[in-house]
Structure formats: C-alpha cells, structure tokens
Image (tube, rainbow, N blue to C red; front, side, top):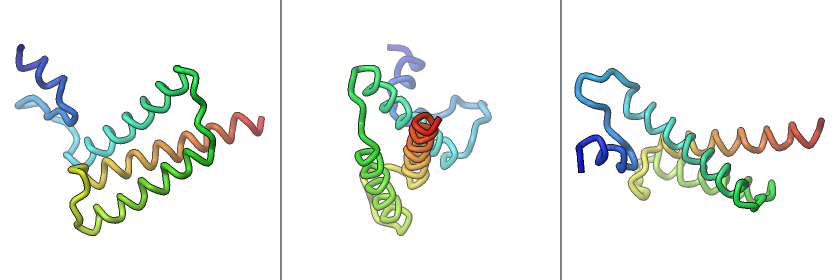
Length: 103
C-alpha cells in the first residue's frame, strides 16, 4: 500500500507536506458538510426518502452534540466544526426540499 492510498483511507486526511490548505477547523467543517450531503444522496439513490421530520431530528441531535463539543466535552473524536458542517448540510437539505415542494 502506497502512502497516497493510505491517506485516501483516512477519515480526516491530512494535507501533504508543503501543500497549502484550509485550517484544520475549516477542513473539518467541509468534511462534515460533504459527508452529510453524500450520505443523504446515497440513501435517496437507494430508494429511501427520509421525511422532513427525520431530517429535523438529525439536525436537532447534531446541534445538541455540537453544543456539548463546543463547551469542551469529548464527543466521539469529532471537531465541533465537523458537526457544524453537518448541521449546515442538513439545513441546506431541508431548504432544498421545501423549495422543490413549494414550486
């Protein structure tokens, strides 16, 4: 296994030496956002349509965990910004679903 293949397997890949990227908090935010978006797309592609209530419950739970993590409690190793990215993705999904049902 090459180092590049190993880096691709990491849940939170680290930038290569000399590579200029976002701060760890920004990277965590983008990873949380992207993962929530991919998860939602995957479940929809496999024929499951979560209700708005289920999405709101997921958002509520994410915000509870974000609040705990932001206050300094250890929560499953995720950065608070990862959770904030996930919450923003869920909010976007709700907005998009409401926009498509209104028009």
